[in-house]
Length: 520
Image 1 (tube, rainbow, N blue to C red):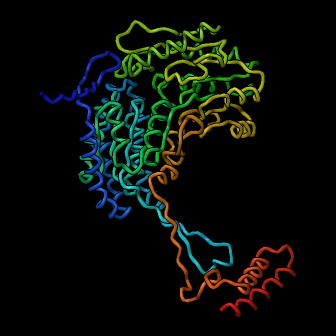
Image 2 (cartoon, rainbow, N blue to C red):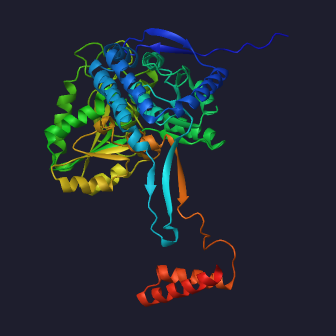
């Protein structure tokens, strides 16, 4: 009887502006995933032994390799992910260059042992410190919307912390994943330190189920929940960034010209395929009509087309399935009373496009106000007050980011404090993702943990507390032998430390001293 033949799944690289298949790859099998993780484990031993400064120098070499090939990399991002060249340069290449430089320059500072002062007199003769040690092998599963930016934002802190990396890029952007591998080779990183596995969901599942020490995942809520379930089987630590439904609040005193430009960019950059996109907009009713007019006029001036056309403002969606989700959200909204003010259809273009769309007359019964659309749709809802806007903004299972637009800095600060989100920007949106010092991550269904910044680096390490006794020959009062005298001694010590009056503290100290002598 013939043995069954395993079917190798294929991953296609497709130009979303034309639908053209650019390349095809075999998905890495479970056995290949396991072998790759084993290779990363072997490489981790020597990588961890390097000083932080040596690992940082590798990041700087990686930065130089990317800088040298920046035009080729940006062109590849445009070709495979569809975004306009300007967005590929600014939102991907530039941010990654800055990220590599940031962690190279600050890694040693963030990983230095941290003294832990002891306030209690009982332990004043001890010295404590926090030590930061690498996990070992970090698995990274990254998405297609920022196929260079997101994986490097996780790889850079993982590497400088002393971990090796196994990256599974999106099945929609395999060539960019392989370009990351090539950049690491060009920078001279030791073999096995950065590993790239091209594959589909089964490859990602095999990585979760492998011998990695921590997993960093960016993607949808349903996939994140499945990953967390698998990870729980062996208590695999995870960082999950699971998207958002980010609200924008425009107050009555806002600069409407500026706010409308921010709204249009925030909703339609990268064709709305950003977890930080403006997906819900709440505007004060007194200015809603004028604000909406400004948004519509600016949206109608946007040029839709292939990313390699210098005149293009908004490129294609990554795949037809995403276009179908957008259509479903718009159709549902229209059926429930919303109006399309501009856009609302597929244009007569090859590839996977949807017109930048503005909806009014929306409410929270509509999918477009509750589910992540991840496309170029801006629903606008007029509200009676800032309090109503905050209540609507917080009425969501997501909590990734939000923005507030006002001329009143005190009002902006107050509303920012009230919003349930991992980050809030006042008079801007999205761009904090390019600030290396800013942690990225959300609450509720938006995920677990943080990436980027010092906090993102500390996700890549195990924290160890080390305590050194400065008088090792002195027996400790809390050791054996117990008994009535020991009890009196400790009662006196407790009174000395915590009694509410000076007199009682003095008496407590006398009781302690008398019984210390008897105990010893």
